[in-house]
Image 1: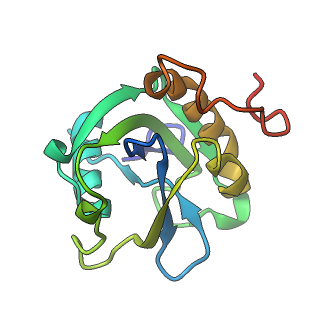
Image 2: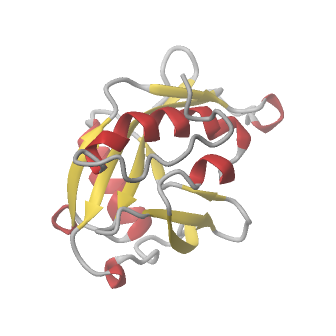
Length: 172
């Protein structure tokens, strides 16, 4: 679904384990790493999209996770002009709600073979702020905003995970 401004409605998924490390996934056949994300379908709520994408992209069901939090507002990023597809309707970027989840089972529950064309072929657990330095540049600000807003849900009883700001990336 693309809104009237050309942004594709989408959910982002940040999956944490019980050690507060995040699932970081590699796109099939590329050296491009990211959090799972996926587009909303017509008449689908963000929560319905979350659980459909969770199943399709990483093989998890609603019973395998606990939802810890969600961003209050839509976060947007623009796709670089040279990467915009010229097919109709034109999509200039993503408009995303981000969810923070906790995996309630073993790592072995994670698998990418739920669809004919998997999105990812590899994954790893990374520290909370690691993705800010690794994600493609045009997504970096949205990742910073989502991680900053959702951190209190994961680290509510301590400052664990906040660490030292990464070259000002955590500053407003």
